[in-house]
Amino acid sequence: MERRPGPVRRGEEPPAAPGRPPGIRVVGLSVWYGTARALRGISLEVAPGEILALVGPSGCGKSTLLRCLNRLHDLNPAVRVAGRVLLDGEDIYARGVDPAAVRRRVGMVMQRPVPLPGSIADNVTFGPRLWGIRDPERLQAIAERALRRAGLWDEVRRRLGRPASDLSGGQQQRLCLARALALEPEVLLLDEPTSALDPSSAGLLERLLAGLRGRHTLVLVTHDLDQARRLADRVALLIGGELVECADTVRFFERPADPRTVRFLAAAGRLREESD
Ligand SMILES: Nc1ncnc2c1ncn2[C@@H]1O[C@H](COP(=O)(O)OP(=O)(O)OP(=O)(O)O)[C@@H](O)[C@H]1O
Image 1 (cartoon, rainbow, N blue to C red):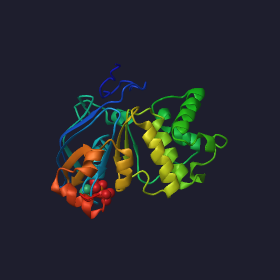
Image 2 (image 1 turned 45 degrees about the horizontal axis):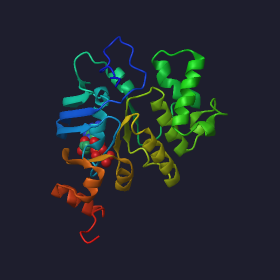
Image 3 (image 1 turned 90 degrees about the vertical axis):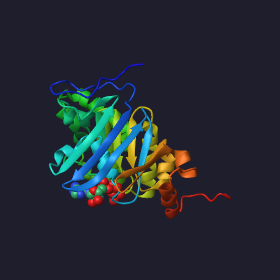
Image 4 (image 1 turned 30 degrees about the horizontal axis):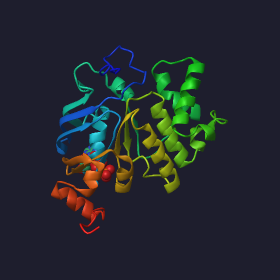
């Protein structure tokens, strides 16, 4: 099987061809915002091509963990990250690894769709243009492919030059997905991607994400336990910055091992009674 190269070092062209997506291994990861510790020695693995859902009460550190996986905290000097994050065995925090190249391999979709100023096409081709692709035909092909994969092509094909802000909220979130997919990321991080959407747009996005399984490795932060159950192959529960349990989705919901998981699921009304 084709192996992808490791994290790209400064001055190298990042990999673009999709092959087997990488596995992720998080080892002893801790994060501090100033002196406040937000993550406490998290270790977990994400298998190549699977969807891992991160769940837990508000403030438990889900988004903090997600932002470690593409070195987004590097942009905030008040944040300290300790530990390792390995993509196919290579530490993305190793000396000489370019964070921008990591973020190309590890794309992200945020909770609220925030289109960039400019047209629909400009939004989708933003990343590829940043990485030096100039040929208009190539950019158009990239935009079409990404918009198709994000389920938006048929709705926007005749108005690619219109402002992205003209789109509905649900369309804007799919545009953000297209913008991330335009760089052919191997890993996709999703921070509550459907929570700001109406149920129909949320359902559509969820089906699109399910379709990405296998071609990308996905890590999804969600408060929606039904969504985690529908989408994820495995679920990880964080409480107070600690990893409580990481298990196959069915086992997580039906036979949780840790009493704190049992309490969390019971409080959310998601624990089936023995007699069920
Ligand atoms: N930029 C920041 N500066 C300071 N503290 C922060 C920052 N971001 C998060 N925190 C703190 O770190 C802890 C974890 O926050 P985080 O956003 O990762 O939790 P979360 O589980 O994603 O929460 P939610 O479900 O409410 O989005 C919280 O105590 C939060 O207040």
